[in-house]
Image (tube, rainbow, N blue to C red; front, side, top):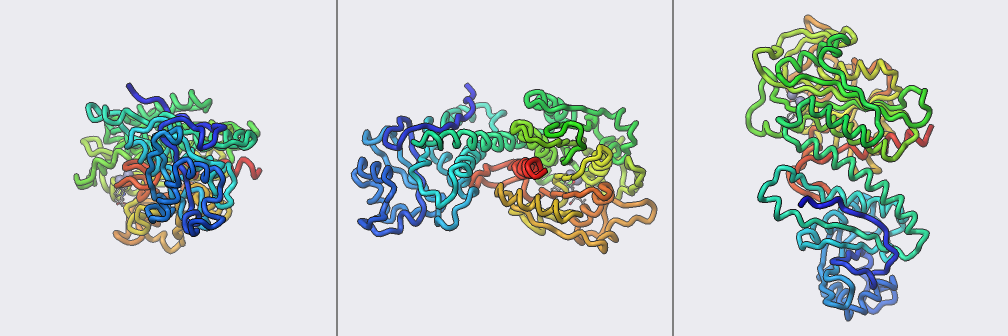
Length: 519
Ligand code: BES
Ligand code: ZN
Ligand code: ZN
């Protein structure tokens, strides 16, 4: 039987009276560096209570240097009838002065994965009894909820036999807090963290889904289903509608595949219903990128089912924005196509015409992301959005520049760039701005059309792509996020399991939220 969703809720209990399978006790390095016997040692009364109940097992672990509180360090004790749980997990939070929400997400995720492997089902984490180094209880609770949902995520929809081993999931996570007022505050913070975690996991599911299932039409159906669940308005344009709009660049990419393209438009009308959208999100939705006639090498090509990670980020973010009922008007636009070689595929040398009349010489059919985004950006620009943010697995160049640590971003507007940067910092999704100087325009000048889709060889390919997109946003404040290095993790780390990360979902929700409450 498939496990139910993880339940996360506050509980008015102390660590001495919680009954369940496991209890997590987070401690900073400062807690453990104090000399045993000193007055400050394990000064928090309820930790002392647990320590006493365990005949000083916590103090002994610290004295023996078996546990020092380093970030994500874990030490397991077996209370054997002395507490209401079978397992007590000491969890390191690192140095108090360096404690952040992101470190809490990370440590929570690693602790829960550890307990999951031990088959724990009902788990609690001490909140009141922990010294969170000055962080307020709301951001702590939110980070715990995010860390739990993100860290325990698994994509096992297609696991047959192997799945049986993984069906024992953690069922519940209680955040222990005795103070009734703070329990109420915990509740709404857990709610926010849950929305962010679920929205990201929705994106991860879509990205991990294979391309034979997740065609452009299926992506549109899934968008319609989640829109219905979340009260988003949704519209889907088919090939005929896109032809009428003159989306020649998008249709040129799509023409090689028997899976026809779609343009998906989602709308959350919060705030003033008549106002123009304060924000438009555009996500690259290439459900599979074989490269087209400029075909890719076969090694690693299976990862190209994830070339719609930008689209998934937009869809995930829209569900989160709706679930939080943000008082702001946001649209999400997803061009969904498949890029395959075939007898009907577009050729290098073809010249296509985008919706705004710009002609584009197609040098390399594998640089298809910018082609579909050009039409999607024209379309979105016409909706009159006041700000544009696009998300795309666009270039190998950004991976050369930033590896898989930071998402590269580009902008034509200082204020929006700053807001996106801040949203990334708040969510722990690291960003780095790259330049867009006019001199780079050389890279995309064509001899026979207004633009060409690649050029310059190894020279600044991520910047060339961004300059290309810039042509389609006019003067609207715009940010382009190139997530090609960050959408996929090769091995599990912190709250990021192996596979699709769902990167930028939380940043985009945070951005929408900051716009909602600033205006
Ligand atoms: N979806 C790819 C991005 C990509 C590149 C993924 C390399 C994995 C590895 C994108 O559509 C693409 O193919 N970009 C090419 C463009 C090049 C042909 C100008 C790239 O960046 O290598
Ligand atoms: Zn490509
Ligand atoms: Zn691509």
